[in-house]
Length: 293
Image (cartoon, rainbow, N blue to C red; front, side, top):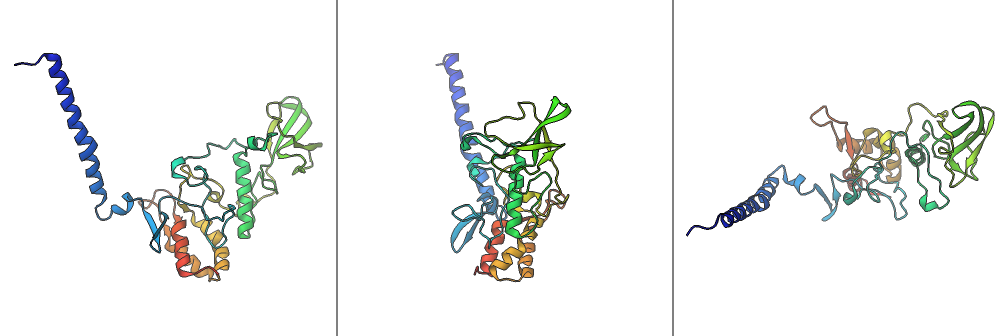
């Protein structure tokens, strides 16, 4: 007996769904899992998990912070670069800050919960903190001594031209003392919470200051990666931290520097990207070779 055309078509479609479900939903994923367990690949497909003392302490592919309960850096460890993923290195919230080079003016609201820092101020604050932690000059161009963006809102008589009538240090809220006392003969005011000086007609004017053109604190120490999960830092940032870590552990800086070199990977395929130092692996090696005092 021949089935009606519409029934035959539905049965054919059902058979196709079942076949492709088995092939793509079972056979293909299981085949990939099997391939991933081949020698040389299994470490990567299992998440590059790292164990210490029989306990999994992290992944070689995902960074983590080395801070105390209050979020302060633990001085005996090398520090990772900043992270904008969730509360830091959260793989479920991988992201960048989405702030760009033009983000130089902070939002200073009357409610502190609604305030936010510009990328410039974040960089300035981080550079200041890293410099203090490692005993180096943390100053950067366009940053104030107190670690915020050195930016003025300059008001002129004719909008963009004419004599200056008012100047506000937009990233320093009252009662802070502005980083410069005057600009073109006009006294500089601190910002008042809730005021939008750019919308009011102020011309955003960054001030370079006298910081060195080549800061002692490298860029990856003050900026987050695009994913927020980068497990590596630059050799320059690692070198900056060597003396502090050696001092905290009572070790020879040369020996600590040797460990850094051992945990430094080169460029991909010899020419892509930059060398990097895996912070977790380096800190575990430090704990093994130089127990903290």
